[in-house]
Length: 195
Image 1 (cartoon, rainbow, N blue to C red):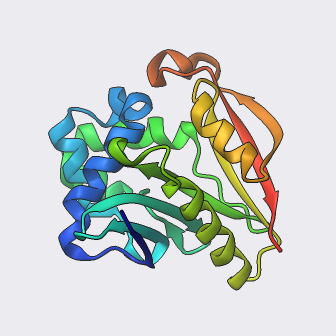
Image 2 (cartoon, rainbow, N blue to C red; image 1 turned 135 degrees about the horizontal axis):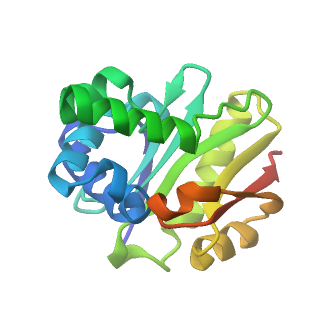
């Protein structure tokens, strides 16, 4: 099976991308952005094609996606207005407040990854490594000397991939009381130099 990577997100892939992103991150965001139907609607609405790299197989199906953040925005962040449009005035506001507490960090010194996910059937086949390599190239082209990502403490498979690709632990951030809501107690910041 061949995999093709490209910048951006074609409109016909948006529903698949929203499902893939929710499959990857719904476990930690579910209590805030659920139920599933609304979360999928939200991500399909907010995903920015100018802030991602996409991997498709020979038949054109989405097999992976890697989003990133810049000072101009983030791949899957959306805005307060997007939250209100999908969840209503009250639902959008309380969700926005909790997501803001979780963090909306921009790092002007390092290229920030805003989610990397690979379809379950394609994991372990090198798609994640290809996306990471493409992210590093994107970072270098944009003039960054390092790339940064955060991984939740229990995602051992992802962390092992990042370590194999040259990422090193910089620090671990504890979530405090928010851990009961988001379902994880800490995230680890990992950084890799970009050539």
